[in-house]
Image (tube, rainbow, N blue to C red; front, side, top):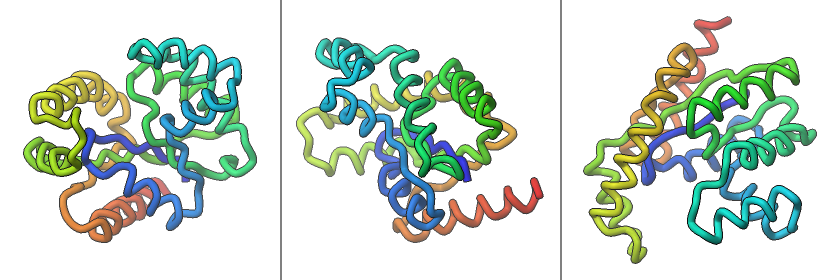
Length: 187
């Protein structure tokens, strides 16, 4: 399966990505991990990304897309993957479609892990990080909603919304059940 995971900060995407990757037998590809790997290895893309990361700016789409394109070309991703953190915008989604189209494939589904703002605020506040104040968290949620709403509409045909509230195992089962239903309808 070729999947994209989206959801607000604190919805449990990282946790679900690890579990779903194992259950589905596909690699979990996190853009955060890609950034760290490229920066550490001092690749051309890593050096370019670092210039932005060091100043707190967003890494441009062409840099992120380049990293994702390279990673998707690796043998373990040929038969499926789980993307976490990309795409975040409609232009990135179009770039991903171009990359996949060139490889003769397409996304199977986009899983949106949904959780009410109050749940997200409580989860993130409990982490105890200095930047996880309620004001900062609520601002991150507003930014997420502004950037993600168009992405949800873009993926309407393959979007699967998963209730991300509850024990990890229950959320995982909801996601897997939804994917099974989507496959049955498509098949």
